[in-house]
Length: 473
Image (cartoon, rainbow, N blue to C red):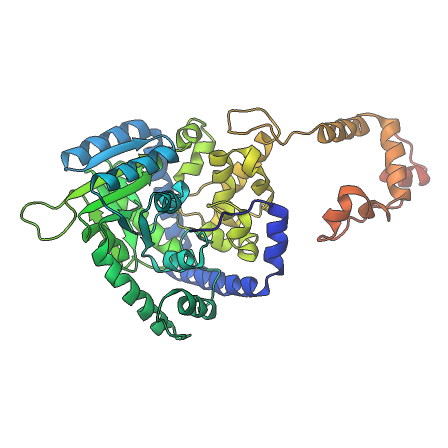
């Protein structure tokens, strides 16, 4: 069972920065991912055209989202799938449980799925006596460790091979201690292989759902996803409402952007296209396929013309790999499932600014995330917008909860200082006199503990001009 994430953000940051091993693991992983991505997108002009195409595909789908979802349901139903709608994660969890109980199933094997993590599905099913096994290697590692993913694409990026070796030796019965990567992979493969055959229900996420054909597309590198969707007699797929595209021809650009941005590959090892349960003349595949389409606040995001750009995300994780904040903290410091730049704009909208608004401060607004985003989400602009919503009463969940009386008084004082000549002169004189003390008192003390302190001039510009004998006009 995964540990509950802690959202004491200040403490999380302090702990992460003090963990030298974590910093070293992240540095190695992030530099590797950045280099791989650069190698598959060497032509900047070509990549920019591809990004424009990806952005157009995503925006077109979001503009037509209600009708595309209806079309997807119709086509999937015609293909023999069973489609379920869930407004909340509780509803989605209950649908999964009902399917399991209908088939008297008590063992589930899972492919990688961020939506299932969003649902806290493993914890929910385990409470009802159902064994759930993560089969993606990274997810399997963090499941053994009782942790949550640290990265959208590479869940265990915060661990090195030595830490994984100790974990396997301690948690897998009979596993020898070895730090050889190939031997560690073999241990995981042997452990998982038997579970694949025992699984009664397989669950996966959905990278792309094609409305035109009713096709579910899954992207992976290990083959475990294909095992989860093929071996068990029942396959459950979970997806957020935003994962739909209009046409099959939209898939190749999306796949090219996703593979290159996420893992630095021209194409992933496996690309699965699922359009129906097993047909009478087929030898493998599930007898039933259930598609659960989850909202969980996404409709509210879609209703805002600016914030709906958040839903363009294809979950490639490249914004995390290039973020100077994430690359020093790792995912667990953020305290919620979605970390990094995309988490900063998505989580406050899903969970509420009142609960997750502090994440909005974890950005330097350097725009590195925007420069690499394959579908051109204006992340920095959306962070600024949500920072405003934190202080203003808008339709965003939890908006206005960060407004404080003290801050209001400070801004009124700032306005008075800059609209009153005598007050401006008096306060600038005081700032000059006490310039060496200012960083050592109040909130500025904490601010300057990790930054260069501001160097205030001994005399203001007005004083210097007056000293030179120049009269104000």
